[in-house]
Amino acid sequence: MSTKRVRDDTTAVVTTTTSANDPPSAEVLRQAALMSMIDEDGTPVPVYDRKDIHLDYWGPQPGMSIVMDEENKINVLAKSDMEFTSPIQRTKRVGGEIVVETENSIYIVLQSAVKVCKKQPSRSSSLPESSSKKKK
Image (tube, rainbow, N blue to C red; front, side, top):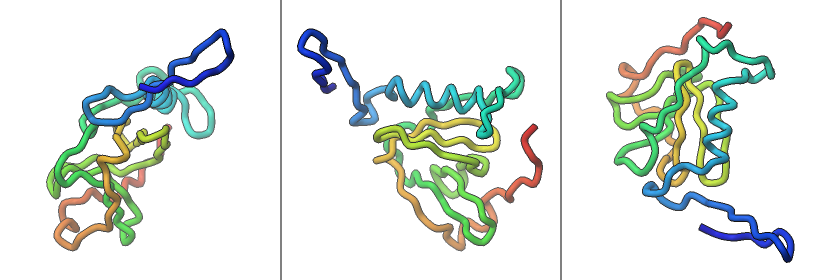
């Protein structure tokens, strides 16, 4: 935890996430909530259409990566060849954390725990196809 001097009579405490043992920052949790509640175009998302926020991919895990499939124009968050999310729709970096919105959910990820890689040929059969359905 670090502190930042705002004024002589006030000290603001600024928390920064440094490891997987620390919880996500308040700001990244706020951004994830906003992504769940408000569409990219600024319109409110109805309560029954809001996406769940998950911490499944928080912290370092062997093989965790954002896999870019340039051929099919999709990216997924993957733990392994057999365990991955639905295609990524948008991301937002908040300090050393990333909010990842997929077709079905929102994930909070520690940036230092994820590597970006191109799709390997062995993954071609297991990655999901890009969905053609539009969000309401």
